[in-house]
Length: 312
Image 1 (tube, rainbow, N blue to C red):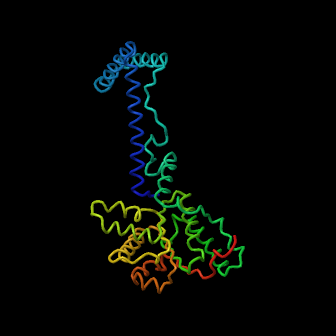
Image 2 (cartoon, one colour):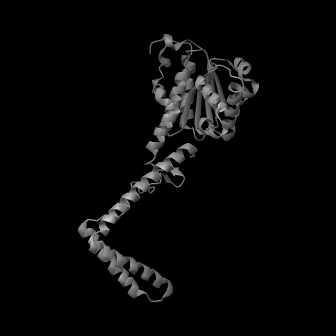
Image 3 (cartoon, rainbow, N blue to C red):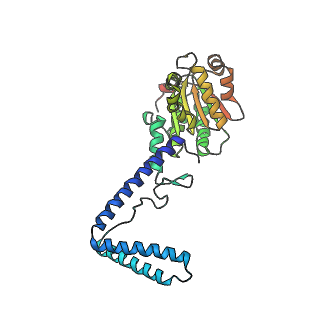
């Protein structure tokens, strides 16, 4: 699994700070022990014996005397530490990763709660309902899209379950207001987050404003606005078409983000009240073509009733 660079940097920095605190604490405990004359003398003898033993192993064929002196000195130090309760060890909170947060290139289980918390904070999920696939109740209503939406929920649940190995890179969901697009997007976002997938959930208005800030910010400071959009595992833009069209921003950056994510193999979902023809008129054929390429995209138009008129 590849983690967004933003999170690996933050996690590495957090664990580096943890190790530094433990090292400072160890140094303080060592300083206290060395104020004890008996321990200070024993440590000096042990240090000298260690150096002599190491040199003898390199230069001499028989270094049994040096090894014996080293072992005797170590035994004295160990006895004093035990008798007087001095703890000079470097405390490690996680033996699995050695307080690095990673086992090889994989995130350690001890760092996963931190990773998920950062993902959820960045995703925007904290401000949306905790909708899950199990909350779908349209099958129990007589709304026109009951069957279609139920099938789509099942397909999208399968998409989330197979997120890492599915061929689908892009999901475009269109339909009139109230047919269930946004609620389904909520369920997808929440399901992926529970699996440790990094998700960015934005309304089209929020996405547009973010791109405007990117466009008007000096080059050195731009990365903060674009990095997570391009690096997150799943980008969801809700209600595309409700945002104002800003010159040199709206169309251009939508295409750039969509194209970059498709090329890099990242997954993207867009919901819109506009149909394909209206999307082409607003954003251009090039952008819509990227969204609807059948080799990697799933495009669905939801037709039916306004679900807000039904009781669930």
